Image (cartoon, rainbow, N blue to C red):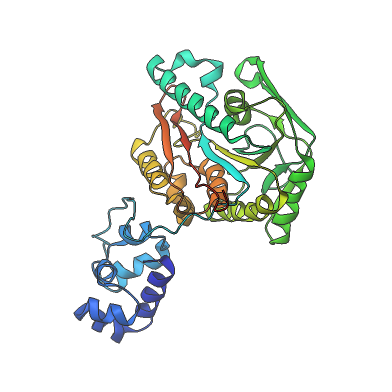
Length: 367
């Protein structure tokens, strides 16, 4: 059952107390009048807000089913748990034909700067995941790579996503006492400006950034994954400290589809960051394995795009602020593409739940 149908039914009930009374007496029958099947009519009648949220219904609407329809002032049937909703069939993947790779990985600085702080076996498993992902990117033979990362040290003029339009990008990990770990990337100015123009044409905010100072967010993954030094790279930088919209990040990625479909170049899309990761004073080092597992299961189920329906607090509360970077990638691929988890390691010393995920893309229809 799609979220729009569920929301329409709940709002219709919320406007009509007589309809609510009839619904409470006969959920399947009245639910059918509202376009609901018997299962989801039972979910609403039972006040199961957790299940409704997993289907993408916003909390401002889900609260009606417990506190208003059932007069449950304590909201006692809701536990705040997240689960993967699989009752609604997945759509067939609709991937832009020029998109030849999509995946994501963490950009933990200690992995290169001082890997000895974490357990050696965990470091090796995570590094092995990077190696496998590198092989798949190389096999895809991209002409250009789009990479998302969040802002760490550089300050931009706005709170918008920033697209690097420079002819080159350079930087080092000097902030981690490793200026020797540096990187210089070739840019793709024309392609990057096409991204900026497409986003603005849709009425979304974007900042054109002629200069992107590379930090660990791009250096850590690309030193391990870039298939060749001269491959043009377009960095897209999110700024979760200034603006945090999971829905907006996914919408940004959806606009990228138009550019990828029309520019005629083979594109690899790499998201970086997280999963659970807190920089808050007193909270660094925390790892939320339970929520990380939920996110990874959503990706494996082909429902990663649905994470853009969560209200922002749900991600922020679980240390997932870097997931904006992933939602841009998921907006580009579209729903229905199942992820393959190549590695996941909770590492408290380096400060998060680190992962490597490939999203194997279906063969184009004309292949």
